[in-house]
Length: 252
Length: 218
Ligand SMILES: Nc1ncnc2c1ncn2[C@@H]1O[C@H](COP(=O)(O)OP(=O)(O)OP(=O)(O)O)[C@@H](O)[C@H]1O
Ligand SMILES: [Mg+2]
Image (cartoon, rainbow over all chains, first blue to last red):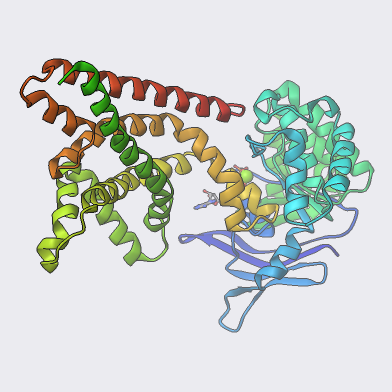
């Protein structure tokens, strides 16, 4: 078990966005999270990556209990150094890439491993160049982010996350900010990672892609998990009426 | 007074002008960052104090502030101020005033940086300090360079305000020379204007070079 989130609750000024959500990620799993806009998918990822704090519930990464509901019913977080350790277990790929514009591509990849993980610069650089090769971006190592297309930026962002050697990679709609003709190159990279058994959690609106790439699908609506299971079951033979409606609206 | 003597006299006084200018920048650029931290501090009291300070600095004339700092100590404590207090008072007044403007410029620059930058850094495990120094500051400077250039040029001209407390920078010297008997008269002011103009021209050039240095990224 890489990540286990139990009974997660999260509200934004009175609006209960996550209502008692539990989910876990095993090594090698590729999980797709689907659901209508506003159902709490991003919030779930942001809680898992500590960009938001949960109100109640527990978060465990590997052997570290990062947060748990305390005596007063409120979630209590582990000390900073434990949270930092957890952060080395995951990477997050944003919809808007969020590359560092003042660093060139190579430095975007190497800065955090050297600074945060205190790894050897030469070794990190070598690994980073290898990652760029894998992403088909060898010739862009010295380019700055604003000189890249959206698809290239997103592949750099994926490489930046991978440079930390995470155990699980989260994606929040990695292709939603891209022109349609550029989504293919990014989805291809993710598919390639899936074939290499990279553990991933992907929030996406690309249904055919989710069906093809994942081995587990979670359908969220209104802050709860409505249905989950194998993609062939969820997409091919949904048990819940709400899932059926959502997928129908999508296919139209 | 002959014209060459006048020019030399102005040049000597211009050293004081450049001294006020240089020391003000040296002090106010970093102090502005500190003021920015105060303005965005999570403690309400500090935030409140800094907000009031900024609004006074921006809402009253720099000339008046210079006078308050110069005359303040002797009026409050009835003490004799040292001889070099004139120059020191000007520099303190200017630093404290410009820091308020710089703080607001910094704040505008920092707030215009997408929050995704901070979030990406947080996920990668950067501490808040590392994020500020490595990710936010360079992007902030890139964004505020044009505003900083404006302030720098205003500062060159503002140095002439030091005359209110009798600091002999170039403007004061020019006035003294111009009204003296047998002086080159109006020509003195013309030469002073050339000094200001050329210095500003050089500063604008330097700033544009720095701006270029930063423009390797968007
Ligand atoms: N920081 C915030 N402050 C207040 N409300 C928020 C905040 N972040 C999210 N919300 C609200 O929480 C709800 C869930 O948002 P979330 O972004 O998690 O949905 P989503 O499933 O990712 O939707 P989408 O498919 O549009 O990305 C929305 O109603 C949203 O307005
Ligand atoms: Mg979202």
